[in-house]
Length: 51
Image 1 (cartoon, rainbow, N blue to C red):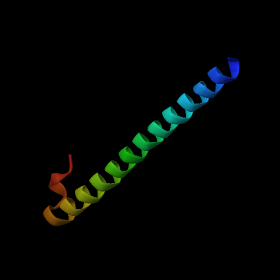
Image 2 (image 1 turned 135 degrees about the vertical axis):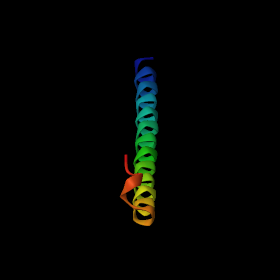
Image 3 (image 1 turned 90 degrees about the vertical axis):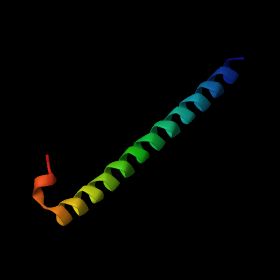
Image 4 (image 1 turned 180 degrees about the vertical axis):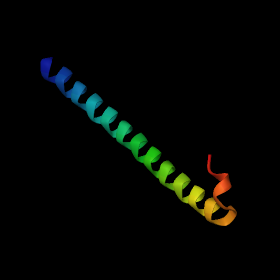
């Protein structure tokens, strides 16, 4: 009985870690893309676009 609970907890931990890593990766990619877009707009239209 105890080993079943431990393996279930391990699976839950692994899944939650995988989900959090996935979201961290998505946020990182979004920030990178946003920075590239902002840089392109700044080069195109000048510094007055920056806040």
